[in-house]
Amino acid sequence: MSEQTEIRSTERPVQLEPAAPAKPDSAVIRDALGVGVAVGLSGFAFGVTSAGAGLSLLQTCALSLLVFTGASQFALVGALAAGGNPLTAAAGAFFLGARNAFYGLRLSAVLGYRATVKPLAAHWVIDETTAVTLAQPDRRSARLGFTVTGLTLYALWNLTTFVGALGAGALGDTDAWGLDAASPAVFLALLAPMLRTAVERVAAGLAVVLVMVTLPLLPTGVPVLLSALAAPAVLVAQGRRERATKNRTATGEDRS
Image 1 (tube, rainbow, N blue to C red):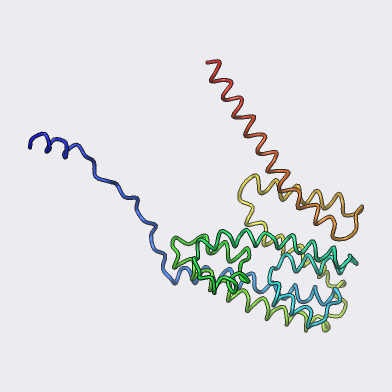
Image 2: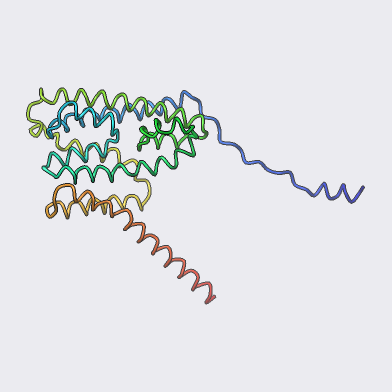
């Protein structure tokens, strides 16, 4: 009995990791509404830009209703406004929107929606809903953040798109107002807060350089496609740098 007592006394109790603290629903809703309202109002700039590019009210509203990814929409109408080939413009918009598929893979595990709900939720998988969802500590908060952000942003984006496209005629010549700058300005405003690491900032900077260098030389829309090469180029360079660092470290250890 004494031996058993000694053995038991040496056993350490299992330390459980503390669970992430629950986030109040009010805080989740506040954050989601803040993102949804701030970004949703940018639909006005898209509506005006799209109308200035020659798209009809119906075409403009259909883009916001069915595409619903701001960067791709701005890229499409921006290329068309500059006289680009519609197929090239659509290809550029497609590649910009392809990132949402990767967001969906991550959110599918976080949200855990049933198969019948996933096709509906997929339409709201964009930068903003992804950011709000992944910031939540548990599935319940993640679903609440995703739903409130998606609903607020979708409703406001489409409403302001309609108002902007409808009011574009009252503004007269949109070029005189400098609204052609609305597209890159809004896109940069959405992108800048997401560039948190050095790799992301270098990739974005390289993409800008590629666009600026090739813009005078290539047809409209093609520079946007080429700028997508910035991300893999930076990742390859980073991988080589990490391998070189490991090799130098291993060589130093062997000599020691």
